[in-house]
Length: 74
Image (cartoon, rainbow, N blue to C red):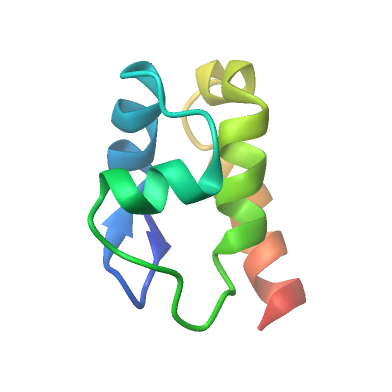
């Protein structure tokens, strides 16, 4: 699933970066070679890097969390 539409990065890319040791939203954007544009993804990115254990939840669990979060911000 896309986490950031502006920069076209996915949940899989975020998870891979976190496994490589990225631990902050700014570090993630630098790692992916981009910067926040509209900012709507920042709360999701912040949640993902703050709580990497939640990324181990069963498939589909994240879709609901991020969908609700995106609806709330957009």
